[in-house]
Image 1: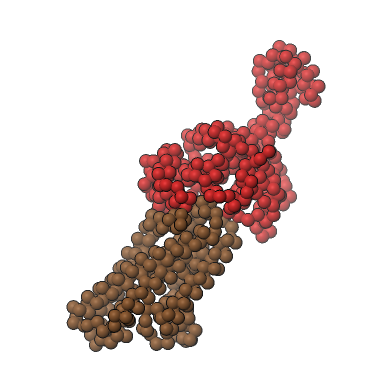
Image 2: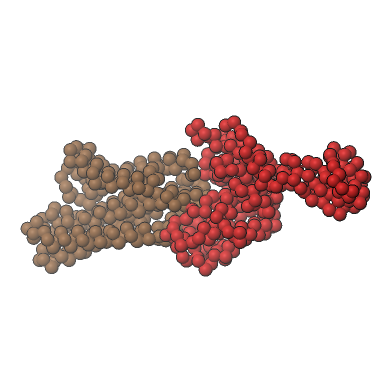
Length: 299
Length: 243
């Protein structure tokens, strides 16, 4: 399989501090991946190495099969926002985008197009110092979209956004990914992106802690699947055959331990058992995330 | 070429360059008007004396160097180095574009600075009944030297900004070098001091002070300084992580 992003044993050392430690992962096309970890976990350093801004101490990373710097006009394939504050305060939002457009040979009209896309056209000619944080986040996103990229890499894009802004961002990224494009989005708060991402990479102390879908993540750390059926005994037997432990809180309900809704649904379908309710219970995602990232990892 | 267009837009799209231009125009006017009106006529009669006054346009070099410094340091100060580096991942191309943009903006600073000093100065000479005794060739050397020297100062500024990305540090380094260090070295050790960039650039405008280099050697020395800083700055730019 060809991956959009491939990170192989990526490491970065700053003096005595190992910011990123032997980090390997792959990102498939058409997915929205959450890159999670507490502050200082090494997320931003990793993204900078992916994007050719920082040199790895060891390992290597490729985007579309090549190091970022070796891509032909990388900004036309990869859009990235690393900080919400990367603007000259005395320059207008439109001029910021025109300046970047010119660097890759795009017409000035493209700057106006993306300003409209992020609904910032009214403020386009105002100096950035007058922008709110939410407006700056949108301007950053506009700059990432200038090259009409196939991959978006966003570092903490929801930081400082109000709920409406978070919702706007979520809808925007969903729409972006629905056209077969790929998004890698970092955050230190799982809840911020839980409704947006398909899968998560969780790192702490520069190391990969886990890589999975959200549901697998929940199941792995003690989540249970509640299932209601008219044939709970038959379903329990089928689940046991697949190595899934169950309990029976009442006549029609089974609690399947350490599995996913999809797996229970598939087994029930194979057995021809009707299901009336199928939902994941157990630890909240945030609890799972905090649990995983609070583990002490030796530096 | 694409990055050069981007760099030229960067220069035009903030008030920094306008501020520097206003400062240059104000300083050039102030100095020229005060010097040409207050100096006794007896001190404005020889070619050397007139060249001393009319070469003040070289002050544009300071402003051009500051503008050049801003081309890199403001990128680091405001974080725009990140999008700039993402949109142009080739550090060689990025540096070259900034180097040329610094020279072009320096050229404009030079034309404006020397243009003001020469036109206003000669105008005041005329009003005071002082004829221009400088030969046409010397006036040409003065103008060409000032303009090219200022353009090279723009390039030197870009080099300084690449070497010292901290804006305050870079500006202080430039001013301390230009106004203190070079004058001390030239004062005590003129044989060495004349090879330093400010005095070599002055030499490009003709023989204004004793002990200076010949004009053509001055050009070579300033170009060498600009290229040396460019090589060091580019090496650091390629090596340094963008954090």
